[in-house]
Image (cartoon, rainbow, N blue to C red; front, top):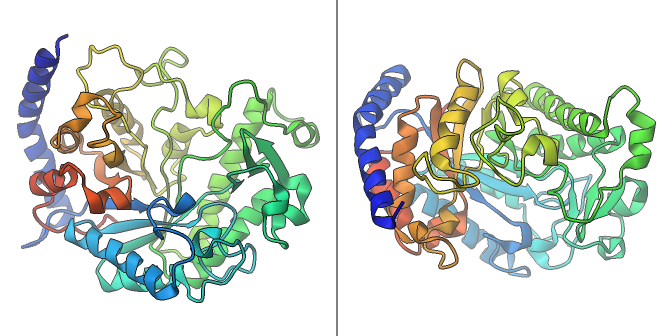
Length: 418
């Protein structure tokens, strides 16, 4: 199909969705008790990533006042874009952006892991977000320790140095071994410390469980499997059970510790391809979370373990007959069917970072592409909102894609679903 005919398809498809979108929005508005001046409740979020200083702080070693000013500026950006929730990465790599008794201060603050930055970023973020009417979800990466393999570079009293048997080097990085019960207990304890201390509105995991596969390497958990895997027919089943336990136990402990907080996960967007499993999506993705990350995301939703799920659907919305590895137009209805009839709210993760990136296909150079994604999703009442990756891109908005989303979809403010 030519580029012109694909564009014609997209325009026609979007036009055909207008009526459905209006009906779905009206139904949601009535159900949510839409009030004068406010749109129906929906998630309008952005991720604020700290790993490798991706979004914040702009570089390590800034003064406390400069870091605080940058953080508040990003929160102000969220308000200006009529967003209502910030997913703040507070444990990017077995470290902490609060005074944790379990793990060292993050190196992304001062440049030196374990060095006190002289202020409390998570505590400040919660206070400042709430002052602006924003929700603040604390975002934790469960198992990543470092973006290198040199344990000696970690802080002197880092748990990974004190427990080297917990650590697996893989793909040029260090990870905690998810197959060890003591690791799972430690990770949960470290997370729950923040949940106890601060009135966070949510607890959030991203897509990293077992690491993404690296060609020619094996994740060395053979000893743990030998000790704990007898009840499972395969190592893959045992690994999935390890992640299931983390998810179920964290959900339970969050609800016990802070009942008002919501627990959710933003996985890679393909559970399984239909060619692997007839329940899977009509995709041909090279990664499947069930098989490669050992994350059975579909079961988490269908079993009601999560308050919300936010699959990262970072692909273009293309005609359904296009032979592409993954397609936003396919995955939104697939995830809608998964969430239908469950207690788990469905949000969609959006690839704002791709808009205007010259390395991306031509469609990502169109400022309207992302707004069309939201129009397509509006035809599915199970979709209760969107989260944009990431904060720096929301602020810079290099080709106006975020501004177009606001103009087309966020003309009135909205509260997040509860």
